[in-house]
Length: 430
Image (cartoon, rainbow, N blue to C red; front, side, top):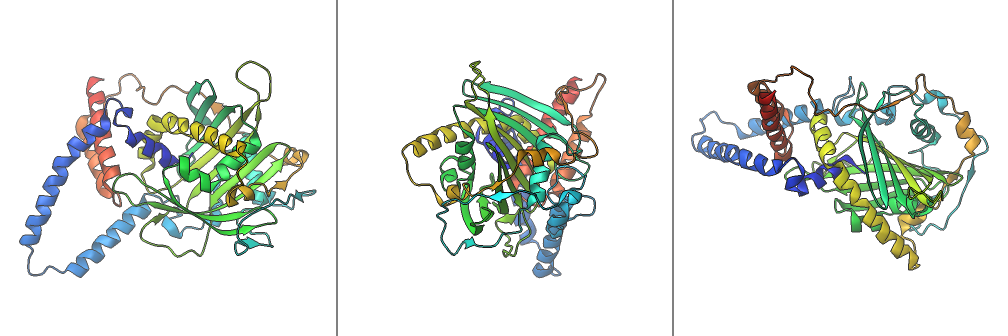
């Protein structure tokens, strides 16, 4: 589950943010934009003689670029020019270079991939390697040395249970961890479901384009291009993703991450460089009390920098996470029915059957990070400490400053002003 799916699902339902916050946002922002448009018309009609359109557009372009890069800068790693190989999409500041060693006893599994021959490569693609497996295994076991995980949610339905955590590293966007248990599902089926881009477009209405750029018939490594729909007036987002699956018994380590690439960059859709979304898929005991291993657990670890201020994204995720997660289960059940009809596998689902097999004992022998990551349950962030009093003017003034610093799009500005109004009301009651 990506961050943007949560925000999109949140905005699709006006009642999902505390009694119609979206409606209030639009009612509030409409007069402002009306006044702005009138100002533009009047300003254009009375433009002075020294007006230089070319210089003005150049200045605005520089302001936009500066604003966009400043919202995603992480301690010297700025904008889209940052080295993703140096960041390595890590969830913590600890380094894993010391663990990059040849995997002794690793064997390769060959599947019946049905991708076109022009996409298949005999050699191993270096986009995703054994260091990514080691890193994913560490965060699964909570031994990566990162910050503590803070529990956000614990919900369930008769056929699915869901828990979610968040943590804030010293650098980079917030990181999310979730555990979803699907009843009556096998790890193999769930693996294929999440890897099947052709079927994903039937249940994920945000995926508007997918293309396999390269694929290895030796390791199953794929380089794919995604374009995802973005809410309202913001531009769509483009992802160039490297992905690969390791198999250890019936446990699957599925790594997907943004990678350095030579695909030409365009103004639209906007490229998302910092992206990490990986799963550990394994058998689980049913929550129905039968004691049978008839369920499947999916541990998801996700973070990305999609150009929205992180605090705004965190607010949207808290409010819309459960609604977005509930939409995945119907897609999985529909996929099970399609597979039961013995229809041929799609090209991307066929690639999911080409895995790298790893001895479980090897993973157990991998040294852990300097400090263990622990899981904490903390009070809701919405509960203020006694005596807290936030002046409305300070809240609204901060919202104006933040909104004016954004790169583009009505969405984030509208959310900021709406949140500021809500916080102002809360502050006045304290």
